Structures are given as structure tokens and as C-alpha cells.
Image 1: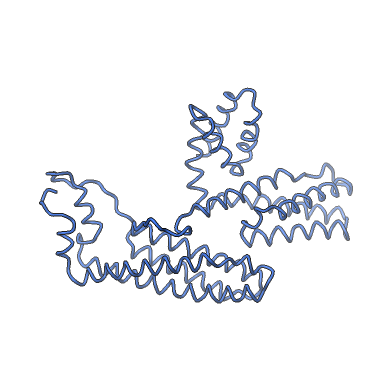
Image 2: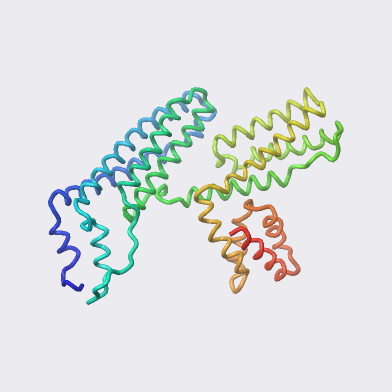
Length: 347
């Protein structure tokens, strides 16, 4: 170090109040990890067919939301107390330590987002979720609100831990978004397969509409029976069940062309809306990297290239059609160029 002082030596010169605040922050982060594990253990899907269980889970999540908001408020206060003067915060000292021996210029080291700001935003978001959960009255509304509450709680906690740059060897599984990503990839593929199975009616007559409705009902039944269906969000599951019920009701009682066309229109519209899964944060980050690999082509690692392509299924219909041809391609080089061009357009 240029001034001959270690980080530990300079840390010892901090005001006692700042050191107390840093110690309090460490304790709160430990408490947050424990709270996160309690939240991750709750699975609102278990109460989907048991209203009393779902109600109990909703009450527990309300208590956990309130506790989480208190913890975020306390973390925000300790962070502000530990930054008693500009330039004396923990991350400023870490930047100082990044200086080369004898250097007189600061190294361009980026600090994590300020913890107090992350806590403020997280507390605001959880307050909104708490209100929505409290306003839910019917089981379907409660299920959606409970799933949202669990997801938002864990996402806020991850953001707080990321802002502290505090990573441990024994982090619980919920600490990282890898579980969310795996689930999102499985569901996205499921939705893509559902869209591919649908058929438009070949004419506006009863037989053509009945045939298209049968395709739709079969596609919905296959989707609902898939193990991946359990990974879909409650709002999507409810929508798909309603569509399936409407298709069956039409086939059994209505059979009018007008009614059938309306059902089909709603099925196709819903299938298209399910593409919104691509807007999820974990998928956007994943797809940005996967599209770069797809743009580069197989190069010297075709196995890795194919795996990245497989994880992009559901992002774009044109890209999907090309990816599905890879396994049986006779001219892989030409197909790879086509895939690279389309991936470059989507980046």
C-alpha cells in the first residue's frame, strides 16, 4: 500500500458508532438469511386444492412480509449510520486498497449499489405486495398473491445480499436465481410446445371448428398433465384450466360455429400472451448470453453450442424452427449461419 497501512489498521480508526453499525448490519444479514429459508420453505401450490391450508400460508406470508420490511428498515438505518461522512464508507476503503503499490491515482473500481437505496426500494415493493395479499379474498386471488409474495421476498433478499457483496460458502439454495432460471426454462419450453400443437380451423364450418377445438383441448390437456405445469405461475395455471374447461364445455353443449371460433380466438390469444415469460429478469440475462453463443456458431465446441440453443427454445418462433432442425440437419453449416443471423437480430 502507498501509505503503508493495511485495511485492518485503517478500519480500527473508524468511529465506534460506525463499527457498531457495521456489526449490527452483519447480524441483520444473518437474520435475513434465516428468514429467507423460512420463506423458501413455503410452497403456496400445496394449498391450491386446500383453501384452509392456503389461507394459513397466506397469513404466515403476511407475517413474514412484515418481518422482512422491519429488517430492511433496520438495515437501511445501519447502512446510513455506517456512512457518517462522505468518503469513509466501507466500499471507499476497499477502493483505496485496490491501488497499486506506490500509485497516486485511484483505480476505477465499481462499488455495489448502495445498500440503503436497495433496502428502501425493496421495502416499498414488499409493502405493495403485502397490501395485495391482504386484499385477496377468493382462493384463486390468494394463491396468485401468495406466490407473488414469496417470489418478491426472495428476490428482494437476493438484491440486498448482492448489494453487500456478502457471499458465504454455505449459502442456501434460494440465495441464487439458478432455481428460478431452471423453472423458467422448463415452463418456456412447455408453452412453446403448446403453441406448436394448436391448429387454426381450415374453414368456418362446424366440422373444421370442432377439429380445431379438439386440437386445442388436447394441447391444453397435455400441458396440464405435464410435470412442468407445476412450475408455471398460479395466474397462468388458472388461465389454462379455464381455457380447457371452456373447450370441453363447447364440445359437449354448444357446438355453434360462433362460440367455437370465440373459444379458439381466446386460446390463441392466451398462447401468445404466454410469451411474456421471456420478460422475466432471469430469462433476459440468460438469453443475452445464450444468443451471443448462438451468434458465434458451433466453432470448436458444437456440444456447448447445441446446449445453448436448446435453452433458447420458446424465445422466438423462427429461431425455434431452426433449432428443431439441428439434430437432423444434413447441412449444419448453412443452418448454423441461419441461426447465427436470427440470434444476432434478437440480441
